[in-house]
Image (cartoon, rainbow, N blue to C red; front, side, top):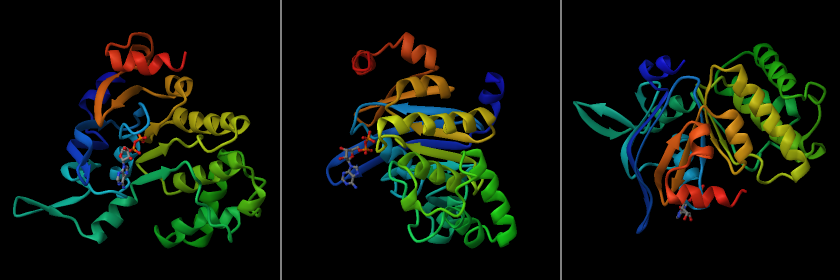
Length: 261
Ligand code: ADP
């Protein structure tokens, strides 16, 4: 497996990616590859740039410098006569189809039932027929344990159930990479477990690459092939869960982990 990872082209490739807001540099020349099917957990203190890292990939923020590739194709740029130029909205729209994201807040459509929440994008973005979209959506909703809630409206669901709908809604697009940004931090503690269990199950099944930003260290240890520790807008340390959690090298990571003990 490791050999495959080293030789396969990455699904996601950040090269020298920096992001500034005004005078503030939030990310400093980040290099990061995510291999096909690799699960990468991103941990680090608040404000260390984790969400920004994901938002750049989701095309919600534009890098100040550097490039990001998805499936070998530039995300934010196009090459014209050997020069990099900013890609147009059409290119970004096309590329977005490869990337799924689940946020802390679920952002479901309140006026649509669960099934319609999940079928909207496959119909209107992928151009699937209603029948195909419904078939895919039902499969996904069953996978996240909501096969009996197809007709329910978001306001009748618990936070954990809403988050599972949000996961199904992203998965139904069959993205090559899925981003999960602190998907349990807005949930009541008793609802966290059901959502993490669903993500673990999807991760175990496999083919999709995942970037998981999380404050749940046990979850990161269980689900990730590789853990990345960010601090001050840089990747300070990365390694297997074993290395990161049992043999952290940098004082900053050691200090960070000591808060969870
Ligand atoms: P994390 O996810 O690790 O908490 P973020 O990526 O959310 O970190 O934020 C990193 C830093 O960038 C924070 O200091 C935050 O205040 C700042 N930041 C994020 N988005 C913006 C923005 N749109 N404008 C200005 N500052 C921002």
